[in-house]
Structure formats: C-alpha cells, structure tokens
Image 1 (cartoon, rainbow, N blue to C red):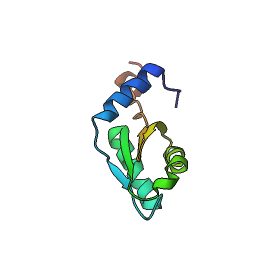
Image 2 (spheres, rainbow, N blue to C red):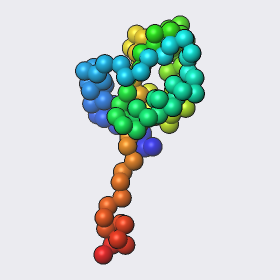
Image 3 (cartoon, helix red, strand yellow):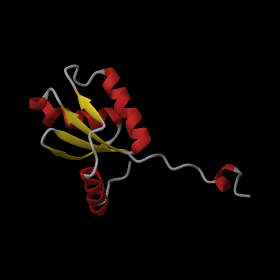
Length: 101
C-alpha cells in the first residue's frame, strides 16, 4: 500500500468523525474472530472505527497491532477509539481483461 498523503489523512479523519464505531474490542481482546470481523469490515467499508470497551489500558499497543494484522493503516487514535483504513483493491478495467482490444 502506498503511503497516504496528508490531504488523504485529513479527509479520512473528517469522515471518521461522523462515524459510529463498527466493532468493539471486548474481553476476548484481539481474538482470531475479531481480526476476521475487522478484515471483513475493512473489505466492505475501507474506513472502520473500533472502540475499546475492554483492554483500555492496552489501546496504545493494540491499535498498531490491529493495523498490522489486517494490513491496514492506523489513521488516528483518540480516547478509546481507533480508526483504521485499507483501500479497496482497484478492479481491473475491461480493456485490461480483454487484452487491450
């Protein structure tokens, strides 16, 4: 993934302000099921807000781990909330699929 520009980061932060948390980190922490659910949410929405209901004291270390495990970027962490972003893959154009015809 190419590095995000400052303008793109500002845009994502602005979008995140209007969002409600999509997922909550509960007592199970970063379980395999949670990582899978986060991966699915990133595939569908690109920008996901995660709230730390439990493990609040570990949020500074868990937030970057979430980004690493899902191949996303940590856009911001404010209070008990982290915002992650992973761009959707660009679909191949019809010309590329047809061999440029």
